[in-house]
Image (cartoon, rainbow, N blue to C red; front, side, top):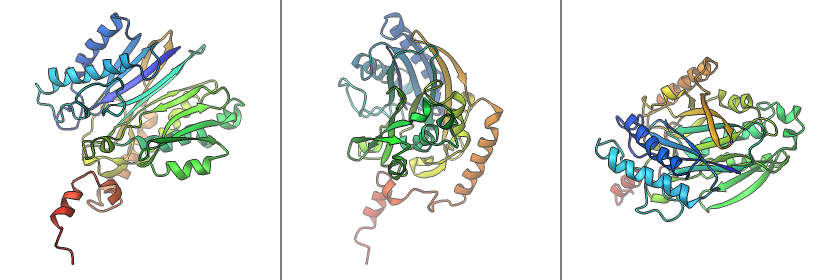
Length: 362
């Protein structure tokens, strides 16, 4: 069995919230290379999504491994002290909400997507990481990939995919999950995931053989910290081909830039724009929200790749459409629907405004 762990954190941005500096990426590579030499991990790849440092690791320790989670936590903590604070990076250690590691990185700030599986004859893996948005941003994409035949032809053509998929949906406010089967429960599924700030897709499983197909990070920083400390910037792992959607079917879902919550100060709606690694830097209005997609082949635990899947003119139209959608929203300024609703503003400065005006209401 091989385990793939994608663990991310914002521990400091170069020029505001724009991008992860090369010093942090190189520092993370050095620490994970040492872990590989000590046989803690099999392989790794370090990259960034905007100002989030992404640690992709393969190992044989299983999901929720204390050893792997501690490796990621120590990497983030040490680099915060060794690099971020010395360079006076913006938001140094921002996502590290706890003082000490307690056995599991979940609930401590960093986001994590993990899956364990037996390698198939050919094992393509797609790795996605987003910046300036929330975990619920994956909801429409995961629905399109695993439940919509207008996106995924295999749901109609392939007997294996035609068996459908099981979605595990998390209620972020209650900390509970429910499993729903597609296609017969897609109405119930949509009733939940259409509210992405509350209900998020955590995992997806094949109903053909029960194998895990996708795993997404679900951390909500504001719910952990009790205040706004930055957007969650989720991660996502998807297995492809054979009993799962083809690589092209997975990527097809990203051909439309759905509106997501986040963007400037985590308080605005904007399009999720697919970009190449070289364009994974948030600029206009600290955005717009963007997603990178990397492709790997898994071979005996080794990460063969990556292929920068969005570094392709086939997505130029999507990027142009995203900027048109961004322009429409920006013209709304401080008004909804560009600015999020009151229920999503409770962890921003709005409560302070209400407190200031207390006693003046008549």
